[in-house]
Length: 177
Image 1 (cartoon, rainbow, N blue to C red):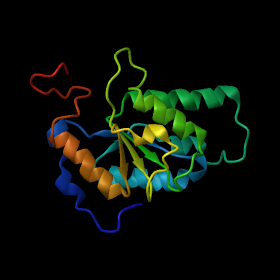
Image 2: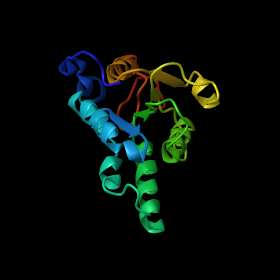
Image 3: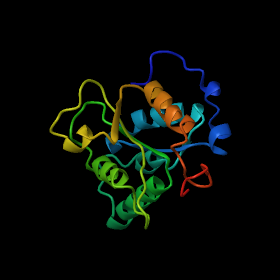
């Protein structure tokens, strides 16, 4: 999942294309927060900004019943972070339908977030093997399956190089931007 080879992250030069670091939201099961943290750290080393470090909010909360207020604040922080991201990456290591929060976040990103004017957020799912066809929304062309962080990086770079990421002050001539 994490890429078998060492990637020359410096060659990506994100900031030159976007005038800032690209933002990614990493969705995952709260019980797998350590694996999510590793993916986030790899993306940070590749020059990404993580739009929300939810891994820090759930650390130590495994098996503990959270208050409604704290749960709501986590949900609000996550959805707000998706509204600010350029890319959405859902971790689905075992290719199973579990981790209800990440699936809610997936649909939120898939539908374009909660902004008044919906937008296209590139949605990626990191998983091994073929995606089970019972996940019907994962079969649509708007969802990109990747099998490693490295593959995500190359596809994200392709979208940036093609000028398809136009968020937060990044203008493309001729776009509504």
